[in-house]
Image (cartoon, rainbow, N blue to C red):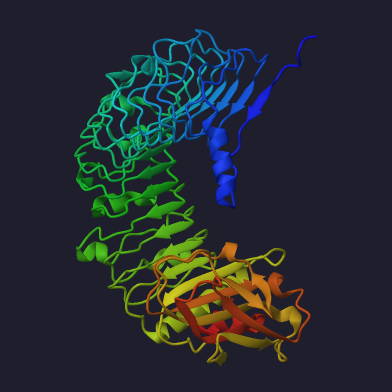
Amino acid sequence: MESEATHSIVSKVYYCETEEEWREYREIKENWRDLSFSNICQLKLLILDGVNAPILCDIPCTLKVLHWEGCPMETLPFTDQCYELVEIDLSHGKIVELWDGKKVLKKLEHLNLYFCEKLKQTPDLSGAPNLKTLNLHGCKELNYINPSLAHHKRLVELNLGRCRSLETLGDKLEISSLEKLNLYECRSLRRLPEFGECMKQLSILDLEKTGIEELPPTLGKLAGVSELDLTGCHKLTSLPFPLGCFVGLKKLKLSRFVELSCVPYTTHGLESLEAWDFSNSPIFVGLLCSLSRLTSLSSLKLHGEYSRSREVSTLYYDLGHLTSLTDLDLGYSDFLRVPICIHALPRLTRLDLCYCYNLEVLPELPSSLRELQVKGFEPLVASNVNAAISKACCGFAESASQDREDLLQMWISGKEMPAWFKDQKKDNGISVSFPHNCPSTETIALALCFLLQGVIMDLPEQPSVICNGKEFINKSVFHVVLPLKSKYLCIVCVNGYYFSNMLCQDNRFQLQFPSDYRGIRVQRSGARWVCKQDIQHFKQFGIS
């Protein structure tokens, strides 16, 4: 009688609780040597994750999926020429050479050699014409790219991140289907190959922290590039083309770009740009003044000491035209005042002013704001903070949705509780009663404030706000920018949807950090209901 076909074999790593269990498990694994699967009919799936012995002597031609995380073998035993494999995953393995010569793997689509740190070269891929993804991230000894890769026609994603020994990709790339090329931290890579005209599908190019000294002119002809990361390319001194040649560019990173003077002072052609990162790079007024053209820009990061000039330190240029801006990061900067026009940005939801040591006052904030980070320097004038907070909370209360949860959070350096919070107590929590002088229909928001002291360098998870012992504000909505030092204020303002189902007249609110964290304590707590009459008073007199 013909034996039943075996379609899959899965070996799992077991966690042994006693030395005896571990000894038995190890003996079993050590006996798994020179296993042959050639006689197993129709084997499709083979998973050997955690098996540390070089047990295979052959690979079945019928196999479609091979997973062997931590594979201890230096090469795979491909004894035949033709295989049915669709996916190979040998991540964290000890592979030196995947296979020798050409193997026919017409169905292979995914090859994962993630952190195979001993891999010296890529295999001949001419026999794998349908390969879509090749992950070589972390192959730190990889120093040779087989020429077959440069002309592959179906490859969509190539990840060479952290291949720190790689010096060249060849003279020219003609991978017509390639959409994503990751060269992150290829520090030995001095130059890029030329890009063939067929590479019109390339969309994402990550060159962060590479050693490249110049970019090939043919890169500028790839108009389909939508994300370009040149972060930390310290040796790159010039661009052979204007950035505007990437007409579809949506995300541009020039963080820690020492020679930013090589970038033309124009944003012409970048009208589709949605995210621009200038972190820790020299910025020039001419370039900043042209930002007003970027009406599609949703994220702008000018993080860092980008200029010592008075003109830029006052940030006089107009950001008011950036009507799509939602995220603005001005942290670690030298300016004295932020642009007055910030309050007019209709979609701004996040503003970062951390470690702006020369900042004198907080700006008027837009009602769309949902997160403000102002930490890391001497506290601002209390009266200015009080006014800014009251305006921000009233603006939030008026604009917040009432049919879903909506929240404003602010983290601000400060030594004392703002006077705007009428109910205050020297305690780690605050008891709040519904206002007697304000009908429930007129109560549209609740603002809570916690004065914190301590140091947070690392936080295993975000804090949460609890009410009467139950979670009131989920930790998933908080965003604490670390580190936190000395004294600072945590302010949250929630819309009516949060407290619409509260049945108690009296409610106690507390800011709760992870139970195993002892680096911080709440010194004082405060609260204030925001009613419609506060909004009217604010509009009339400028402060509630």
